[in-house]
Image: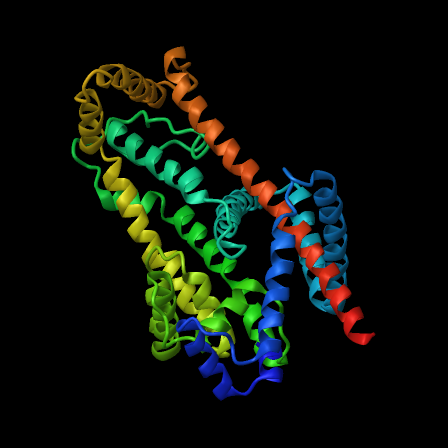
Length: 409
């Protein structure tokens, strides 16, 4: 955008957008050459992946990791007062943690809750960080956890699972439960903490696009980020948007820009793959941090999270699950064969709930084995995407350095 502004005037931008829609050549040839250069550089970077150039990719990944560590060390040194305060607080907590006394029960309780919350916050950050390339931790972790609690609550007739082993393992309480005492709201209350922590993590993961766009707008520099470039091009071509995706992006941008807090809240409260654009829009138009983050936190950690919880709990309620298993059995030819392992799996889960430490039959293990392998594949893909992304980031550094050297000659 900065290069475009330096080479062409605003009326020329509008004329260029119309010429593109009519199939004509751009008004400004220098702008066209810049776009071609950037597109070629982008294609070169995207070709740098582990399955094509493994040695180069790993080499660039290690170099980029060292650069990021150096930058992190420098930022921590700039904020050494805050770092020192955290070190002092950490030392005090360690002394309280390692000293025997009556306070140990409270320390252990705080430790357990802190680790439990940090676990779900971390999974939430992994789910949303990285401009849409995150790990789908709701499908892999939080969703199955809510489903397990739902199935156990209906089987046990209670949500007062003994701790320990809960949450590592769910076992029915010894006391006989009152028939019909389980409701959707009691299950939602049981999983509220972990669900809200996961939602808060997804809100934190939306901050990088906001800070990137805000820094670029305040400094006036071109961050050379593809998502930010696409956003600026979209702002230029608002009148000529034809395809559905572009119109959807423009809708998000207009809602956030015009409605403000409640527009951000609306975008964050529903499953929205375009929410990264909301963060970029808020950063570009210098929306105050607490307006953006407050609306995002309320939308994702409270409103959206309760909608997702409700959907999972209803889907895995006792009657719905039994109907789904019966529906599987009604499939011609293959139905009974598919129905049997599901029934065995549900029966094994019921046995586990009533007998702590009981062993499950071998026939039900293949469902767990398949799910574990799916989780493993997705985690491996996520790690590979991180390696590729960091290697491509280092390649971008080299391209920028080479381009600046060419300009000085």
